[in-house]
Image (tube, rainbow, N blue to C red; front, side, top):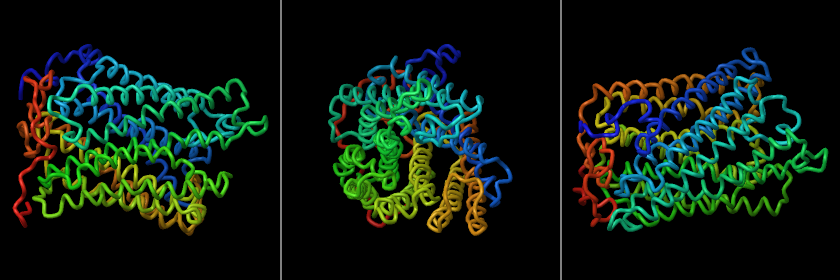
Length: 533
């Protein structure tokens, strides 16, 4: 391994805490996200243990409300939203652009500390009695009726929003201003296009939800009548403001994962991405149209039938660019020289799970069916197929694909493949039964339920235990690889892209000489027909 890398330069605590190296900041984000994933996973385990039996015999109804709320808050705001942009995005963006760092290194470090500072308020909310409003903070319950720690949780989420905004702003400026000579827009990796589209949503959408959450805290503290109907407020106004951001936030979570999938498929199939420009512009299309579909979360909230019809049509439209990506990925793999390594297996899982999540999203775009399954476990299953089956599977693919570049070491390939298979099996066993239970009428957010739904909940809880094993395995074998893994070399996958043209791990300045790009994105040699590895 090189001796002048970010990993083994000055290893004092101070050098890490004050670093401006985007790679170190990315690693600190990975550590923080993993920590909060563990907390969210603990709450998920409590939920599944409670739901093994129909009677609410493990947790009280009040405690159960707090458990599923804190699971949602941790997973959405502190894991899924920063999951790929703040970790893999931070690490890879300057490398993929051929530059030494992001545009504003100090701002990058600040965004990490803002993330940590916001998390402290939310962790305090847990120890101060928990939060029972649901992760959506629906009013007037959150502003009037709830006796839980709404204000510290709201402040934590508000502060955390600034981390997202700063990261998005930094990425946009970096992509516009710091590309290597010759790296035109249509030579950019598709992961960069995905990060750019994500940054647009972060910069334009996050202020809306941040202000909305502050208004909840202000109404709770000062008694403003913004959302309380008893004093002339409108709780539906809160839903409009919240979902105007929170539906595009789904694409903050999923767009970077789509970018990862494009990179892994091209590298593992050793082919140019089919329809590169369509895939690139589909990311922007998702980001733009995603701002126009928030009302499909409110088909039963009292909006007019005409508004609901418009939102229904727009929701069907936003599915088109996602479908473009899936079809172009499969066309890329067709007759490719596919190497079925661990990252590619995670990608295959991503496509299967995201396809189910996307198709069931079309069910929810249809008003009649949406009204039938609103507030049932059908919604829970759909959301997790998109978020866990999409965002986290994409993240796992990316971590395994770029782990040799990040650390200079290879992991145990057999264990990687086994863990990917376990995650896929455990995930489907956990969440597919929830589609059936939800369509049959099982409501979400209840700690007790009718006996008829028990078989589906037992299957879900069994699947959750398998899923936990699948997610724990990479923690162990990736940590083991840091000291004992095989030396990776600069380009173990034989991939193209600027990040593979420097050492593994990269030096502090990323490149010893300024790279000059003279080739197109994914310029692989044409594979021999019929040759599959």
